[in-house]
Amino acid sequence: MIYFEPPTQTKRAIFRPCKLLLATLIMLIATNNRAQELGDHQYTSESVQLGLGIYNRECALCHGPQGDLVDNIDLRRGKFRSASSDDDLRDVILEGRAQGRMPAFNLSDEELSGVIAFIRAGFDPDGIAVRIGDPGQGKIIFEGKGECSNCHRVNGIGPRVAPDLSDIGMTRTAANLQLNLLDPAAAILPINRPIRIVTLNEETIVGRRLNEDTYTVQVMDSNERLRSLVKAQLVSYEISDQPSKVATTLNSDEVAHVIAYLLTLTGRGNKL
Picture 1 (cartoon, helix red, strand yellow):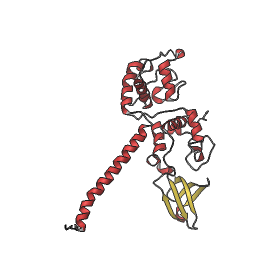
Picture 2 (cartoon, one colour):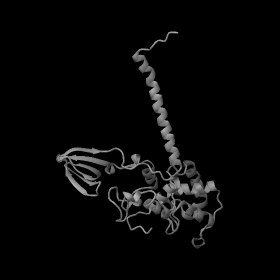
Picture 3 (cartoon, one colour):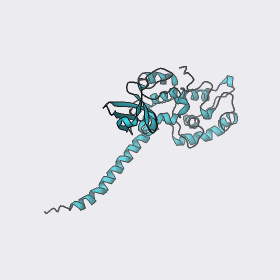
Picture 4 (cartoon, one colour):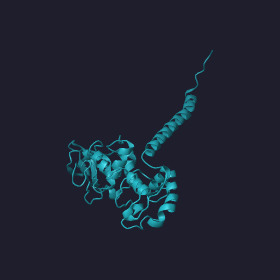
């Protein structure tokens, strides 16, 4: 049997669609994996939609359409009298609060998750509802297993090689914090991207950019020294597109706890 070798141009024409198909498949698999990963840490859009109906039916009469009619409580903004974690909210809804004249509600697990999802989505039916754990456990993980305090400073304690998180709860949503933990490359702000600088005297500086103008750049180097450099005296100045950290290896419960802790950091002196 005789085999004919196709011309080079023909081979390229044959393989080009194959390469495109392979690239598409890889992209779809990666997207699906990331969706599954995020799904472990947040409520589904169906739960949020279900919660909207249950809230309007069971909760809106007392708490109001925006969740702010009861004193010292603003459900839409995540302000509660005593509850902080999702488990706390479950207990309040199922058991009631006599001192607050709130009755107990007989909801199914699905309905209960829906109400909490709607609250965590900020009363936005199309919003993202991230699971919130226990802030006390989150602090332990932040300072221990998660190794977050190895780089981040909180309330005057810790290194300065990474952004200070003392008021992160005032400037970031739960969904944004989740993205920072699970996909740092997608969430990192331009100012926080790692930099690598080489000066005219051949000194290499690696660190974090703090400020920059036309002529100078201020950085916190890897030794926690504040440096102000004149651009005209630099041989190279590279800003990485990738963060210095990788996606967390914490499980979904641990991520929920860390997010809960970060949300308590409002720049007013955390009590945990």
